[in-house]
Length: 196
Image (tube, rainbow, N blue to C red; front, side, top):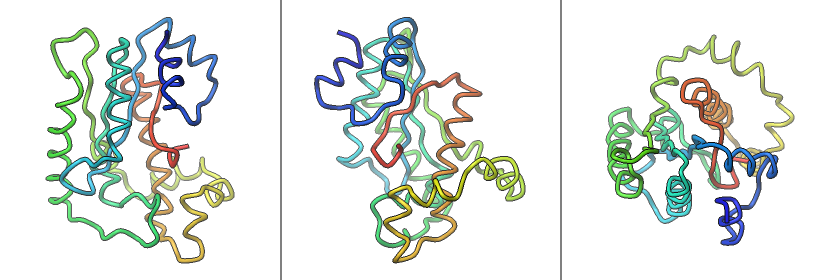
């Protein structure tokens, strides 16, 4: 049984793109995949367990997980499931939370002494020095407002209010994937339904 069939059997796949093509890709080569974890506290929580275990299952199946800690996106805060904007943490607080989460993830993923070691990445490395003009001109222009407004994360907050900071969060997530694809040959993302 392949990794996708195993995950499907366990009821762990809700949505996917090109299931047939993905299955073929996973059967013929070791694929790099990632899941993101925003450092909004100094510890992972029960909601992180499923994605962490999925990364582990992929690693056991011969694939290479990338654990992306959102040192950049964590400065903004994910609007998913929130009725009001998060309190913004300081840079030092986010850095502390980032290190704590990195340490916890090393209890689940093999980062050395295996043929397919996991990698740790921090999106602050590419988001931290991104200037506003470049962001709007080179990245933001590729996103349609109507599509973004229709996303559940945004639509659920339109009546109560959503800041531009939170509204832009999904663009930063997309930029994460582009960066991981270009610099690490990452071809797959796993995550919660808010990532869809």
